[in-house]
Length: 181
Image (cartoon, helix red, strand yellow):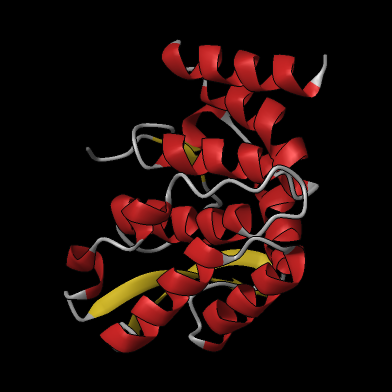
């Protein structure tokens, strides 16, 4: 299938509640840095796509989902291939950042885990949002990623993609957890 056919197939799978097919089609593109595929996964996670999980993952499903949306949206906006900024409005909703703590993805021993951190100051979030909104070159995107990493909001993409590969390799139908909304 062409890239466009894969994206269409994934969208069709979304409407049929076929979690495993969506991940199987979109993740290989996303892993290679396709911003549009990352954005599609982030959009669907922000709605009702189920998130494959490892056993013994702690935290609320909605918080874990948002943590992954955050990672995917930042890397999608700064991707060298098909950058996509459509989800920036969602991750920079002030309600998320004004609640004190935020759940983020952290990689421990090569596995996805989640940590609760104190939300960065509003000025730092605004600076990151502006950086991502205005980044129009790969180098500018790298500066934005460095800011997000420094704020401890995201792991390195190479670590994240390896850890997500491990989750998807052990996928079982019951391991796709429905979003709570």
